[in-house]
Length: 276
Image (cartoon, rainbow, N blue to C red; front, side, top):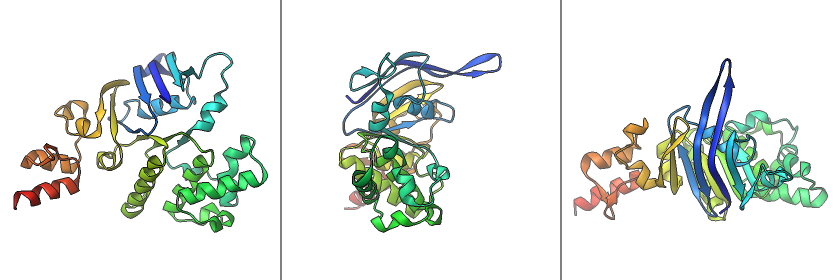
């Protein structure tokens, strides 16, 4: 496995008290996974994400990368930061460079890449997100919303991470741009990058993820395949609304290959099959 959280606890200090954000979290991320962290607001999803690449240190428990405790004495956290990339929500708000090249090259430059190797890393990262090399010279602030989000992602991919962590990556995007960005994430996963995504949009989760982990009040309530989790009768108890296709499927008793429907396409296929 690539990443593992073992009985992780974390508290945010508040005046006169500590607020528990994570309470005994166990989680694994394996090669090729595409995992969604879901749950109501304040359940600990983003806090958990920040533990996966060492930006937060647990109050108790362990965070392992390829079997090694990343907070053990003498461990070089830069190893995790190179291999476990994190894209914050609205990451383009943190652009600082006069050109796209400056922003995308920032992380690999800080990790020692120089010259032709750095230039190639930037070009390769831009190509991975579907942007031409010519965009390097443009101001990042002149780009469209979708292009900005891709440039922010390219800045993470320039490090050639094995794991990609994303916090609400499609927030603020229009429907067409959102669909394009989700397709990009699926393609990156097919190329071998493990992905962990935080999302409130369960239709989005149904479209891209393969595994889902439900959090509430800092605890893991359930985990399994996306179909198992999003079609579970416990969704209401988890303070979650199922995707529209799942809701419709339950209402009409629709099945896809003998299982509850998960997507709009499966629902349509099931309805058409009834008419034959």
